[in-house]
Length: 346
Image (cartoon, rainbow, N blue to C red; front, side, top):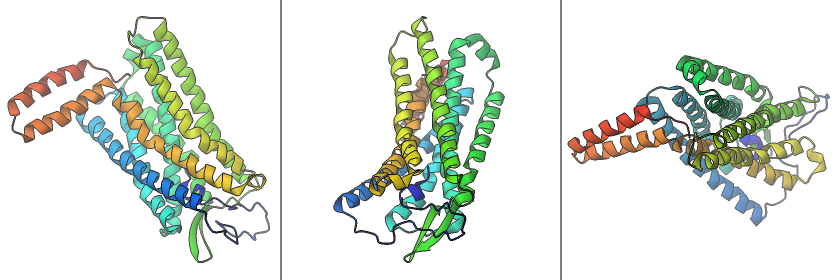
């Protein structure tokens, strides 16, 4: 998500071919910000800091457990890659938080392009991985025997590489259109869609389709098939899987829909009130960013074997620190035997 533009919304775009483009990240005459706008800006700044802290340390914990504490499986491969994607995004958030606080870009043209690229790389890679997880679960439920024989770590790694490669390709527009300019003594990082008359529309629509519409349809179809399958079989005696699957779909929808709606409205920003678009883009990008710390909760911490490994790792360290080596050894042995039988499926 393009924080450094969305948080500084104004008429950034000049589609004329006259070559007289002037990068403005604010109107020539800027009205004084109202108290409500100040409250919104401060609130979103605080939210961004919270997202950074929860996302950074939450995903770091997921990487530590799934990468070093758990046996390498297809499921841990999905979760590890998803956590790395969200971790990289959260690691870049301090630059944008500083931009929001100072209202000036202080990190140069290269970092302006790179941070935007990293953000969209996270957006596409995480969404593609969520789709992969959904399809994988659907196949495991519909064709359990085939899945048991064909699901290998090597094939999962190949799928992850392909997902990241496609995400890189779709993130390249950030490297092309992101620029740094100066206005009224302030340096800003903005989008300059002057390469072609329809550059802005092409980028926005492609991001909408590849980053929301198509993935959302696939996820909905997969989880609908899973729910129907589980309801017509004896594969589950609990309603928890249905609740978790519903939470996954609803969270994905809520986090990303506002962002894409206001990005589409921004294509014809002349027809809408700038203040409304400004607020919508700010709130939309914050909600989309929140997905980076919700992923560990919804996709990992609800997995039974991850919770077991988390508890056993934390408790064993506490017990070792207090000198209770005997009980720690017995606890680790017991939980290890449970982990070998458990699966990461919700």
